[in-house]
Length: 282
Length: 120
Image (tube, each protein chain N blue to C red):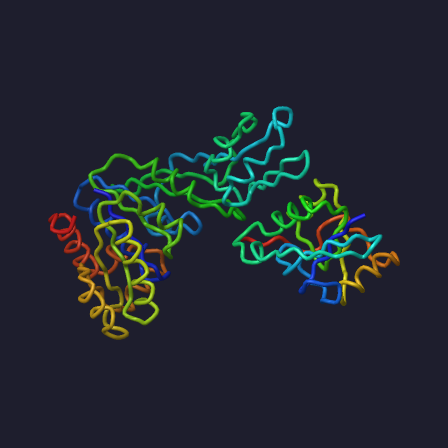
């Protein structure tokens, strides 16, 4: 089973929940994989502190034009919706920083003058933390295209009955790439107007992608009740509520796992896991 | 010869648009007759990314050999260079004034971009 943990709003506690959930499964003696899909700012490793056993480059393919074969017809530039190709006179220019590696230009070229070459965009790291199989991706500084790195992280997932995907914030391409194919999407939110605003976007995204969705309300006793009202209205199940507790923040600041450091979080993670595994939702 | 002036309106009395890729209009001017045609750049004005590259291709298609504008970014500059178009930066005032600055040799041909590229 693949459980993706996303939020919409940043800083709601995705990594706290994802790492704590993985830790809880491992404590039970079961195999579990934790994938940090937030390749622009991966931080799961700070809490799981895995022993990294393998590092390898992540690459993506970008087009190169064979100037001998190129007939300067402009078909590649026309098909490129990311506007990464310019045809001027007898020159065909490729701007790799705009390229999304879709391969469309290869298909469009009637001369078969376009090939693809891999360019490095980041590093894939795999390792282990206690019983948790750990994978993350670290995107190179200055690299704008994160989805190929996220794909690499997902492809490197070790076989385990439960896979937890710690997703980036937001609801745009990197998140779509991360949550695609999951069996359950857990949306971590907080009971604030900002939390609710982004929760709505994330729920709409989940519905568009036809994903099973459940909500975890973090810092549940702060803020207002609007998140509960919304979840009831839209029939989104609330699977866990975690109270606002300074002990959680202090553990976080020391790089400790919330479920290891704070007993009531451990209890709630076990309960959340039971709900997920009961199959009522997924 | 033909030059393109980036402008905020459709004739030579309109103000120069200092931006190249997201200029409102391209004025194609015949330097011998001062005949001027305006070409709308609205499509690139609202483009999420790559406006400079598209604008540079459009200028190439118009058959101009020089561009008079305020600023140009690196990707637009590379594309204009590939199209063998000379870029004159720092044009100010109206399009007509920019044309006069160009004729008087007051505008410098750019050797490189003078502003940073933007991410989408």
